[in-house]
Image 1 (cartoon, one colour):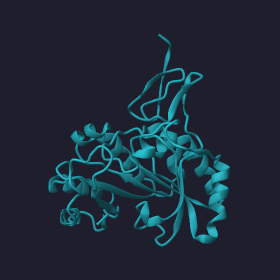
Image 2: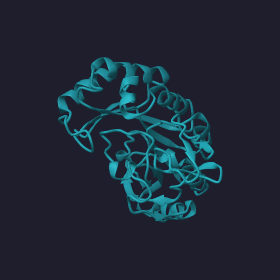
Image 3: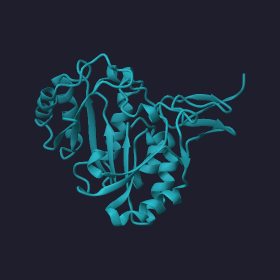
Image 4: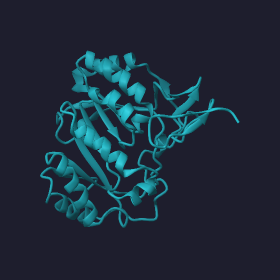
Length: 279
């Protein structure tokens, strides 16, 4: 049996033989270490309104150059970007862009209202080295860095890129470990990421929960999540988003709009800035 090397990025701790890809499809064992095999491999690129990230209270009305690669370290059956998040290097078209090229492109569309770069679409942190290196160059050019992530990352990598992030939206998938068992993650890890971001003065933080009927839509669960966020910082904006059947979770109806608004009212007992999405 060949010697294996453990990936340090998330609690999955994939133990990989030389050349093997991790569960995320984005990191590969190579020369005795696990590196981001998707480094600079861009599958998606768009100039988006900042509100689409979603960020409601960070530079409203501006645009941000959004970039995605492939891969994710969770396995959400309801994934809204499954075509790239659940893909590997041979499953989806990509083109290579070095950090300097991406920053130059972001700079070139400043005149159109662009304020920086958003790492989004797939899970950016399975390729955190690219995020870190690009974000560093972006700051040198006076551009902002936005992160849209599931927050399922170990403290070491988090500490490397967090000082470079100006705004983040973290998906809080649910507020029970049972729900995180369903998506293949760990609630405490995501909470730890949110705590770290909330404690970083240079990082504006917002949080999103996709409301799925019969799974994470109880008033008790949303109240617990909102109460916990308020204990960190009551000014954290919280987004509650309507679910539509997709990917592998097609046996449930779309979330009733009335339920999203009802749960938003529950969250507002603890947080003043609660937003509804997809309604």
